[in-house]
Image (cartoon, rainbow, N blue to C red; front, side, top):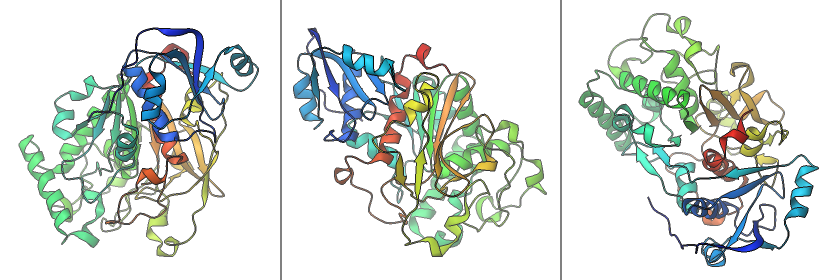
Length: 413
């Protein structure tokens, strides 16, 4: 995937800077990330002003910037003397983080992703940020070493095809998905899809431990850890791999292999549209559908002491409308103690947005399917971000895309 690029001429207007505000004065919050990514890709550094006017960006003023900003429909301001801004940041819960490079992005997605849309896919396309699609053969072939950042599509890494058998096993899209996954597994030398997915999850974990940045939403969050914990076990019923499951497998899960979660139990009724008790049971309660959404609230962190969670929660609002997915939220008592809770669902012990460091890398899990669609049933039209240029939920996604661009010596916490 490629994005439009207007070349910035070498050289700056000496002493001047431009500010890309990210408060309510910004005309297009989401495309501002694409603008910053484009600037980084041309070899220019950008300063991310954490907590300053919604997490604004500032850079030396290059010739040609106005045309580039106009292409991205992004508001900006001239700053003749930035010392006043730096003084405010120095005296407040704010920080300056230097962004140095445009991260190389991998987007994990099966070749027949329909009927699923994907929030990250839509965010990247709307912001005009380039990415490369990878799938199981690529990951098992070592392709992740080429990328700084990996997003996981709404995949079921347990090999149970999203547990959609009960409701959709006679639908063409479901049959095509199963057939594609099974043929791919056999081509790669695996007897079962679950074995292939297990090998993929271990490669993804190794990618993180070796310094990669991982981002996942919806079912990719909990099923990744379930698959890691179930290594060597068969947790797939006859509907999914044509034979039975390992006896008492819930008592044999190894939580030490998980990235984020612990002490969970898989739901043993595999026709149930829910994998485990990591998630809240709202997708099992039809009375929830159609009701007005609750909200989730971003936590405030110390920008100078905790720059990573501060960066990941940059937004122009701190209370955001809840949205559902196959994994809607994470039960607090199932989250490992060293994982940072960055957003919590109001009024209940559920986390919405979490971050953790593992080895030399890290992961961010964001529960739910589409930040601008509370319910989003299968077959609905995807969200058009032209109608949501200020979406705070999509801003959280795009924060993660710029995270690997940060100068890492500054980001150690």
